[in-house]
Image (cartoon, rainbow, N blue to C red; front, side, top):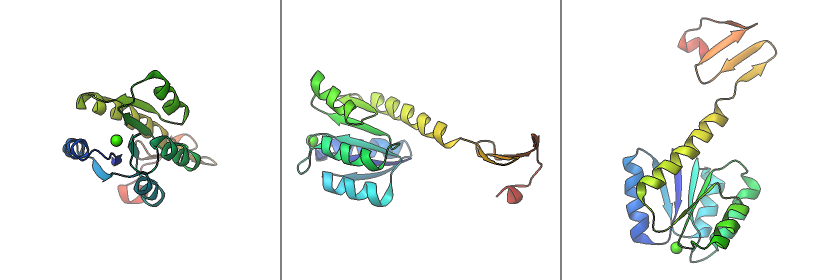
Length: 156
Ligand code: CA
């Protein structure tokens, strides 16, 4: 997956970057809200991991701005603000999940897997055009409910 990591704590960002790359993710790491908003606009990552305490724009504002334009983009909020009120504000502002620092890297991975499953569920929707259905999950095409035998090239 293409992950955008927004974290201004360089030591933590570096550790997370390495751990995520070991899980075969492509990671773009930035340390400011402005850089995060720019990348979300230009590259649209699959998932955003967002720290709330950023040096320029408050993470909550980054969250709200992003949510206005990208309603389906999964956002996992990462923060030292573990108070209940902050969690509620984060979730109300459009975060899909919330992880309070300090956390175990395995818990972060588990939560990313949940978001990843949600993305693949969204992406697996059949494409229907009249009596033709294309299932991008099994790479199959049916015509009038009968599966067509297609070579890979024909399917493409
Ligand atoms: Ca921070």
